Length: 228
Length: 228
DNA sequence: CGGTTTTTTGAAGATTGTCAACGGGAGTGG
DNA sequence: CCACTCCCGTTGACAATCTTCAAAAAACCG
Image 1 (cartoon, protein in one colour):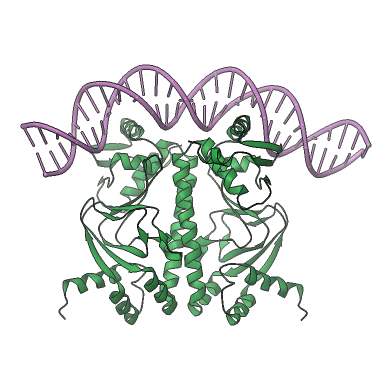
Image 2 (cartoon, rainbow over the protein chains, first blue to last red; image 1 turned 135 degrees about the horizontal axis):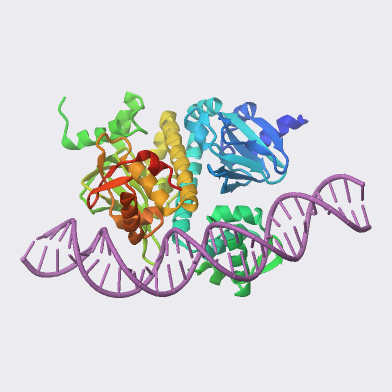
């Protein structure tokens, strides 16, 4: 069966993405017709704060960073979208503007579905709505943990956790940080200088090893977990 | 039409709570039959971390605080549930244990619905699932703002915002803080001592007035908003 | 009213932020 | 292929906010 490139990618979205891939074949085909597909190169903006927020964006392949910009012009990293993640919760329930920026970190495929289509789809396909509820629930639990950690733990502890999470699930002991240190800093609620110092400190203590600028190796997982 | 007290409260839940009150009459009646109702006095625990998490708890009337306890035994306030709010996202998607504590701050009516019933209900009534998606979406937006603020703004600014939010929507200029300063402190990611000092500072600067231990009056809203 | 918890206040100390300068790597253009 | 530039990361010195510890005062509860 030969398909056009565009169709192929639209169905990829639906096949690849957790909130869709448990749906019935019929639903999957419906979703595929409603989805539009876009490609973004490294550094391109998927959307910006102030844009009309009328659709949900789903990462079919690649990575993108979501961040806010304060009145003073300072960035605050919120999270990194991986394949299968989506962004645009704010668009789900009201006509509004995006409050975040989303920027591709590499070549990234994004599928979008308009709020009205998505709401209709949820009405027609309860399984989708339930998937969505579950996905959002997971996200809330994670956000709560994150806020608790930021207000509770020291920078060194937060950084250690970040390294553990980022390296988790990789067979390779050597892993690459997907973000610049500047972004890691705002993600963890600190400054690039402090990140630099704490990484040195962790290395000096023998818990990690710096391979290159953004490649590291975990040497002592247990000790990293017990910081603070 | 005469009803038993218990039935009355069960329907109150359904009538009062945003995620339910837009449902069809038929759905509302179904929900009412699935809901169990409990009363908690000030200080009683609605659930504790480690409890089996198999139901969603909805506040029909009253106030309750949700908090975590760290390994070291320190509390971290997460939020205050008001009438209509619910807690138990973690229970939505998997058999697991609660990761939070929830404790009544006054006499509080709580309705609970089991995960399995709730999931069935969402399958049958897409409107409910959509309401749920919207409610969770709102919550995520709020949590993101909160984390951004904690990592970005000074304690004085966070406290000022907290006072503004807590007093918002009240006609009375004098308002009562629902939490002890200890809890406000962990909510804002600081210590009771710092809260005490910053409140004095705000009062000295003429932005607020201390009426009693936990009653305050906003004097200069504009200046409070512009801190930091 | 007695006892316990909460809040306030003070002083000292620590973690982290800020400012500034330097070094290095990546990309560009000659 | 080399030189130049720009941005990022590093390092140091200093400042500031905030935390911690301790003790006294105030509020709360039965």
